[in-house]
Image (cartoon, rainbow, N blue to C red; front, top):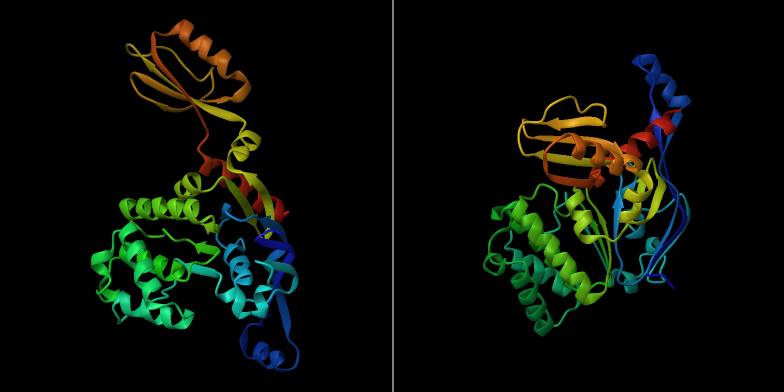
Length: 329
């Protein structure tokens, strides 16, 4: 049985559409019209034990809504879901002790208490023994390099330090499923990398299910072998990350470095995306890369050739732009 499984999971919101003016307000007392927003529609996927899955989509795509339904915070309008064999919105204690939801933009720790005291509260809630608590908190704090910050007021911690404490709180009870919603949002480069390294090591060592939403493609590329793309509440793609590039990119980026100054026009070889006195970068159809390289090498004194795929974030951005266009039609 998959650790996480959804089938046609749907969440529908009805919002009251008020007409303008006093007369509109009076009419609303007797007859109301509503707009329907499908935050999630027919969402179906399954995740096995130990998988680290990226859950991607633009703002308002339905990512957080799905995570909240899988965590039991929202009841669906339709469809089914199972997390470790339990229905999330039934909120059974057996499930609550086996998963964690970390929302990067929400504070789960007491603002005016030292981080250690907030963790102590979680220890009492989950009934964790003192010995296990000391061992787990000590080990996680050392891995995240915040051992010296445990007795600092949460409001006095930097954003990176606070997020690391939130991670410790989320993992204190050794969950089997971890839902992460933007865990590196707003972090500096060093803190974000530290969090990524920790998550990679923790997932590999514990083989827990980890489902990650992020707008930072570096998070996804470093951590997730599989991605699920969602837009307007519907699944667009579910599969290996590299498949997106293979399936949806029609061009490659070819960069030439020349011995001296380049001469002539390069527009005939492809779209010129960048050019300096001794370099030129072209966007070339995948099938024409070899031919373009031969032509340029035959015309210029080339010292280096570098061929790369279109950046994954650009590919995904195009997919979402195309999805938005189709949805509008």
